[in-house]
Length: 373
Image 1 (cartoon, one colour):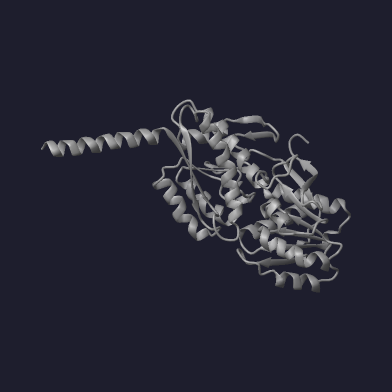
Image 2 (cartoon, helix red, strand yellow):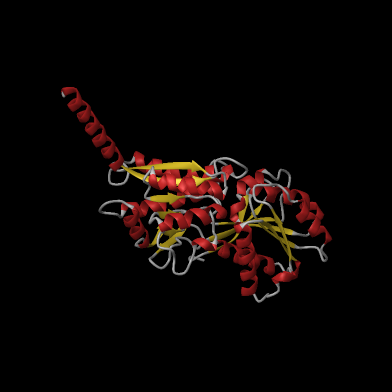
């Protein structure tokens, strides 16, 4: 009997210690690409967010509670996302899914989190599917949208006197690429061009370097393109630019931010000029591959999340975090600019920078848009 009593006492003590430890942490989760061709995107986003969370933990956490970020690998494959999201919610008891990398995976993860009443925040994608009107209750974005990025690209193309008929598209063959097509169409229509079906549209399979078909199609088109809009991952984008940079000596190559600036630059040794990319964080005064655009996006996105967490006076859970994010209103992030969140506006930033790759492989700002411009 005494032995049984001791066994139960030990069990209850362990349960109390477990619950105490759990209560002392704010559990966040991330499903992202840690393997496969796009693993560096996920790793940089994770490292940027976690760097700021670690700074907060070293300062005592949020009202004494430490932030714990659990990251699971989905390989940038939608099929892996379902198990990851369920595991993060059911086993790790996360109050938010943060920093997802990519549109195809967000298309699975965001609706799952939203349906379970779990905040889905700061994904590394500007896709419309995360930006509904009115917004989905638990889905929040840090970055500007791909639609806003594309408007900056199209404006620059037209400002250089390039006819819309001389634009070609190179797109990833999935939801990201479809988003690229939709936002290009919308941007061109905004500037009065309604014949996107007349433009050359090429695609490549996700997680592959099968770009030869697209190049062959562009070689055969007449007149040859003067502006090529690329919506895809950095490796196929780099492969495409390497082959076509000399084939089309007058063409300008425009990439959305998803192509990962420093990774694209590193994949194009000796190639510069006529290569542009939109960014959703400003170029740093001092270039650093360790703290690149993606890392800094994660770091800045984490700052906004922490602002919301610090404002919660009661229990910190997904619902209180949701309301705290919606109540942030307008505030300033040092070195970035104004962010704004509200019940009817779940996107913190509207800032976009168009950058140009120079011969030192540094991305320099050409123009910027946003609330302060």
